Amino acid sequence: MTWLITGGAGYIGSHVVKAMTDGGERVVVLDDLSTGSTERLSAGVPLELGSVLDRELVDRVLREHSVTGIVHLAGKKQVGESVALPLHYYYENVEGLRTVLAAAADADVRRFLFSSSASVYGMPDVDLVTEQTPCLPMSPYGETKLAGEWLVTAVGKAHGMATASLRYFNVAGAASPELGDDGIFNLVPMVFERLTADESPRIFGDDYQTPDGTCIRDYIHVEDIASAHVAAARRLAEDASASLILNIGRGEGVSVAEMVTTIQDVSGREDLKPVVTERRPGDPARVVAAADRIREELGWQARHDVRAMVTSAWAGWCLRHPEARG
Image (tube, one colour):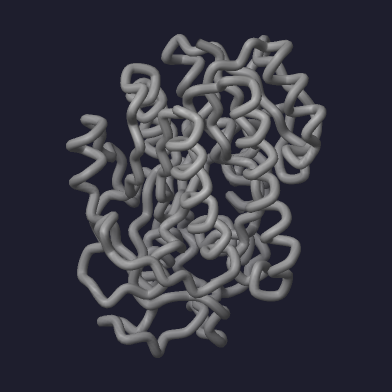
């Protein structure tokens, strides 16, 4: 098999590429490098430069590389930005996915793995979020991911594709320092950036209905995200009738305040007291995964804890920002 990995030069994408190639799969990457980097890809991994919105390009890549399966990670992912730019997010995320699926259907690609998100759930009033929990996204970003799942499932049924949509919870960490998160979009690198500048970490709201008032999330190591993709890809290769929607999480909640404390401990910067600012639009109070179904369907479970995530992420940050070690 040959897998096309869209967005494969990005933070999560490059980990998926590494895990799949380490597992013996042939891959080709399609990326516009808007947030990705060629330095993330190992020598020998083919890279096609361009957008998933370019139908002619996607058609050519599928044809020339004899692609038999697709892992679609390309897209925009900032919740706050999506609130300000909903048209942009719907175009990039939904139309981009539609374009890739249309090309896949015409090329008779029979396996499709979609990068979704726990943001599809919104703010569920449950202790653990199962795949059957009603989806009520609170941001345009979450809406585009839910619409993407519907589209993937429908196209899979109509065109005989085995499909899976993987709902990521909060991703952190790095398989190696070179693959660390370059973006300042998620909590861990945002805190790293503040500490490196000798500034107090920011906590966006402490008046949520949670024990310490800060948001609670299920954090998952990016290596675990990548290994889940390998397991899902193998299932799709073996089961032509697969139509899966699965959480990828640890099933353990960690508050933002607790995560900031861990980051400060790992970095040795306990001297900077966190400051509380206004809530970010679209942030739910608590979202923690039930991870039973993915274990049952794929035989997969997370291996890394929160401290391992933060420690590996800090090593990657310091590689790119040596001043952070002081």
